[in-house]
Image 1 (tube, one colour):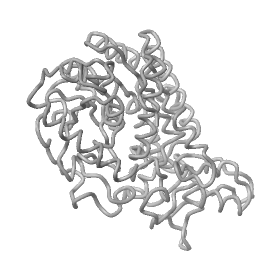
Image 2 (cartoon, one colour; image 1 turned 60 degrees about the horizontal axis):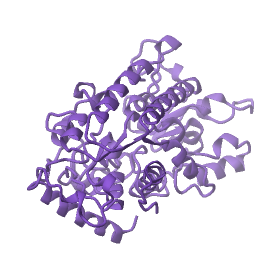
Image 3 (spheres, one colour; image 1 turned 30 degrees about the vertical axis):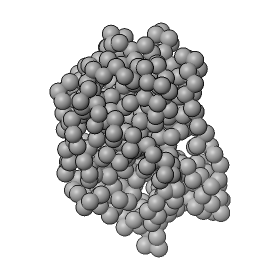
Length: 432
């Protein structure tokens, strides 16, 4: 996204936000020329992506780059954002995974407050939210819940805004913890330890859908759950760390065990190298080395399997995400709402081909068999060690935390939602 575009976007957003505080029940957006009537009072629910979280933090700059702001602009509609003062709450990273600190030199726990009160808030999304917290803050409460919602749930805040249209992108946090930590339990019975069980997800989704239906909305779009196993560049195959070692056998200063090598000592493929290892292990002093074998930690150790997602666990997460998405799509279909599958949107970027500048997920490693192919795979499709800017690290569509989308990705997301809304409701929102 260009600087000039952001400048054009931010000014109107700030102006209308200030005006909203003086006219909570203003109806002018319903009759203003150029406003798409369906989107006249648009409210967005969701978690960190919808709220505008980037690079491990959130502030007024990242919030104004979020897809709901862009979608409202396509409709010519006022959209009140609960802007957070800089440096943020928390402040975003300045480099991958916070290697050189955060914006403004802020600490990881520092939290700047809201710039001013807005009524009604139209982006009610809260970082960390789960599907259950749409109707019950007890499922995922944090300081941003209070700053953004003021004691209400997202559904209550949405209803208070008397929406004409609602979007809800929720469920990512019902699976993300399992995907990024690797602790799913050694048996099938323990596999749900960090995944929301499907029956609970369904019940909580039903409650949220009922809340949307009970509002004044004339339509809605539901967005599915991202398959972090396939898409999040925070998780990379163990072979990447091994192949990216320096002369001392270390990755970013941490030793890499030989169990991450793509081939065994006998020259045969090493299945452990396909286990996904989170970048979080690099900065965790509790781990003396990067290992691709969850069994390296003794049974009973609380760290057993932490940050390492083996292929069986990957399958469990991906199956559950697919079930979540089936439930979300069924809810959209049952209510004649639009539905967007974010994985279909991401697929085009993941498979864009060399050089993989949009998403660097080591796409070429699974098919590499020779030394030259391994080298090409790392250089072409994996995060580049030492790089501090996209697209040379996680890719242009992901920010420095390896999970949250960049401003450029939010443009793609907004276009995908606009396309789905147009198809379902016959609107003519711009899709580019």
